[in-house]
Length: 318
Image (cartoon, rainbow, N blue to C red):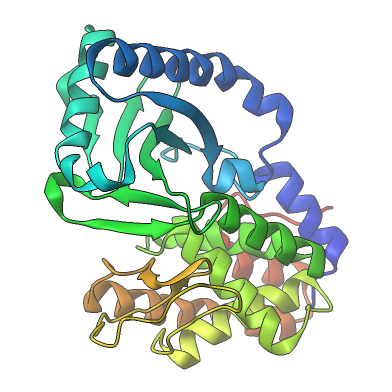
């Protein structure tokens, strides 16, 4: 049986929706971290923090409610006062930030601070909050863009955090079901334990909508997402109107989904061939389950098939 928007919205509201009331319990911890990082950077380095803004799924309104085994992830863009000409001098910036934060949080074990290629990860084990700090160096032109240095001098890349937010905002305005489809896709990703970032999922759903128009139902939008991944194999290079610069011609990455603000940036650069193949295979299995669920007549059978895709918490109203 086909599922109505009311039925899927009921599941999303009960299980997936991460609302303002639930977010509130993390706000104090986030505010303290922002204030602490600003203070220790300003007091102990020749850098300066001009502002720290929330980004990622939390800011875009597509975050999932935390569940057992799934923590709360947030991204914080740390805008640093560094001359553009000095951006290559911050190769050790991630290590500097970790050292300062370890002094500010002396009781936290070293394993709670993780230097990633583009971010500094912090794990607050008690609350289940995972924070990715994204160092960013504003540039004069293009307006709204920043340099983001990679760990250990791996280089810098140009992007626009505000432009990325505007892109998702426009996708939501063009499709009233965009957020619900993205949430279902993220839940499928989490349940299947796949290596496909939330941003990549948001971009795939937007790309399908750009090509086919907004879906008529949430179920149809989710089905289109799975079909795109399963049939196309994530082989197609995705780019978006309005992005600056050009796709790097030598990029032979297995998956090429590009930043909607700068074509030079492949947001799936670190997805391996094995991870791509695993994601595509899982999408094929999920697609079969959803199609089968749409063809059966018994509600219990439909529910059981959707559980195979989204997990045991999925249920239909009685």
